[in-house]
Image 1 (cartoon, chains in turn brown, blue):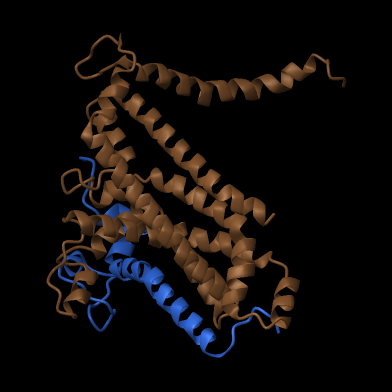
Image 2: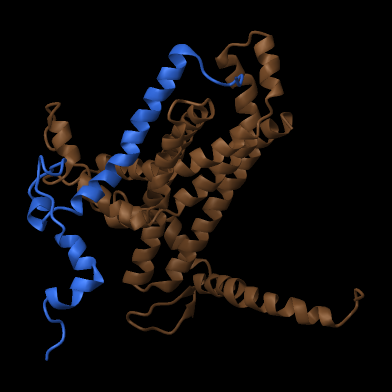
Length: 291
Length: 80
């Protein structure tokens, strides 16, 4: 078969058509919707409003509040996931006794559906029938408002995120640690490097590429948090724990304000893209230094 | 012996940390498991932890799920 054989069209078009239909068309369609005022309830003919939806959103304090909440949840939970995940991966990699049991036990949360996790969290954090409040009363605390006070609710959501997604970080970092070559450690031991020096100058820099990738994946996934918040607090109390996806859901599927929601989705997309690009740009010099 | 194996105190520190994290990881799963053996009344009646000690375990929930008992035990869903 030569380069100009017409049969190449037969092979390329089915895949291209599927991609066009399933991902490119909806993307372009929602982009056009975002420049229109389109409501389903009450049904109104679509009207072109240019950047009106975007201007509305950017001047809406609720949008900025929601973006701030999402950023807070994403950064704090990913930070905790990374610190805990790295510590646990290091411990597992240094052949802690009972390593096999730990390995299996640590991976279990990742296998549970997020909605189920959120429901269980609601049971555990329940003020009357939950075990956590009873445990806290042992130390003399009153009943704690885990899901009904803003700061506590944010903390609970972050704790659930950490519980569920640290296993992923452990898995990736452990895989990364096991690919590190042994000879550099032998050389370091020969030079009498302390364990802390070995970690700071060998393990961490050599693990940096995979750490970057893991944190990047987790950060983007955390920005898309929906199910945990939806089940645990529903954005409440008030709208204080509402995230970007939940806001989009409210606007799109409760108020059927489709133009506004499309604009919100595209702002959200730009937001995440900017954060991702800044993150990669900040880490680039370090990644290239240790190449 | 690998060079990266921990020695002495650090080893026990790592073990302690792992045990702590294991407790945090497994507690919710344990909670789900024991809740499946409680009666609805025992579920809402405050936290209990150990089967046979704190509460009397029951297989009601599991029986309701099993296909063998599903047909006769539940309330009739269709009028006959």
